Image 1 (tube, rainbow, N blue to C red):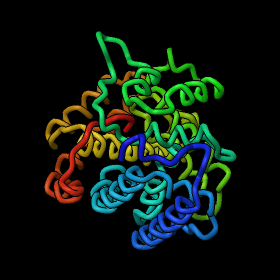
Image 2: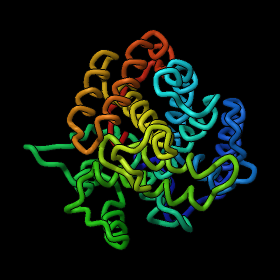
Image 3: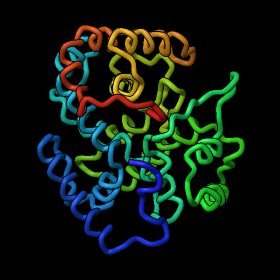
Length: 304
């Protein structure tokens, strides 16, 4: 789906409203099929935002299936507190909701955010000559018809497209998702689920919930949440490298091990737990191959 195929950010037609309603119904059916205990009847704003994610919602469903498949060996290695994978699967379904934009009333900025998260048809290298390319360079490379309006809207929201790296803009979705879900707290979206969602880019240093990454007594509540956040982070990156990064299973696991080894902010315990997760992923190659055959399509990774 390319940038030009998106609806005009100022004019949402009746036909688009109907399509969105149909998409919401499809999202509800898919969540019911997963049977993860997420009640989208009481979270209407969550349902609307999930319906706007397109391919990212499909990725989230695939991620939930990965967690369900690997939960038993992961629980044995990490001593996870949950008896079933349902809460982690709910977190997987919700983890990219920030790609619909920040909390609050949705408007022109949110429409541009959603468009900028679409996997681009035109290849875009994130770095050039050792420097991160900016979100402004990405917008220009995609030759958006309303490029100038997009750049002006980003500036209105305090984002300088000439200096902000594209990858940093995309990683804002962790903070935005955290803020969106804090307004949706309930039995099915509890505090721990929100914390797990917020920390799924932990490997890239994104920790909007401020989880304590230092050593704490084993069995403390923060360790339980951190373990699940680490699991979410590892599975998220595994899926991104495989589905949109052109990497096979072996190279994906090797790349993830390097990411963990290069992250010096993590404690020894966190490093050990990440490697335990990767051991389980590595040993589940056959299951992963089956789960990640998504229409036989491989693409170019952007935001993860």
